[in-house]
Length: 181
Length: 143
Image (cartoon, rainbow over all chains, first blue to last red; front, side):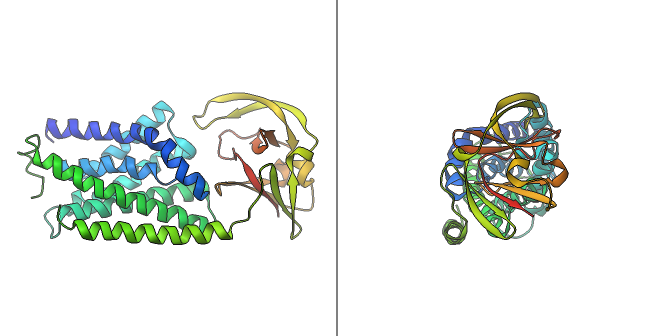
């Protein structure tokens, strides 16, 4: 793995973890109005993992970032409502991103579309794992919670595509052989 | 970006589906006024006014979401004073955002409803984590 890619993964890993706290108050306004326990800020946090996986193209990089994030979250006490089970909520979305992005390299299809669906899928998996482990929401509340996660995942996935395009256009990652054209 | 219109259309569809579910959910959910808790027991539901409860002082240690031990004190009611201590197996307490926790009949003496600023919060003093820290309780179902 190139040093440049490793530094970029580390940067996105940290950004993903800490921007979640920044967007939290804004997302709470929406989730409080909908009477659901969350689902928006995670999608934004996962956007950085999606961009990093897209740019570096390293196999299992999103899973690795999720694992590092979970260790950092446990160390800083940023475990939210999942407590000690927080690593599951970080690692499973990372696996979903890898399955959609880094493990499908070279296949047909536009990468920005895969980034979009990777963010949607990862957000929904994060929401579902939080529900199974902690929230245990009843049917209709769970449906709203998951659809909010999917929508915010879609918006952030679209933003991830834009970020990917802009980063690809810079000279920073020009010699990155794993990056798709 | 290629497929820009397709992706924006997908976001729009997801947003519309979410709105549809949200409207249905918000219309269907039980509504309680501020300072009230819906109590469901023996198949009957009634509104419990928090300002009409006889509060007593409590103090104890709980674990917050970071796993740190914390001493809390305030005014509230023992859960058993609201539900009784027999004739049921568990109590399900649900918050305004649908987060819920179950308190078994043998634990009701350890559970308190902390009443502060017209809101009830569940505290279970025997717990080693914050899983059952239900804030803004709006529904108590005795099963």
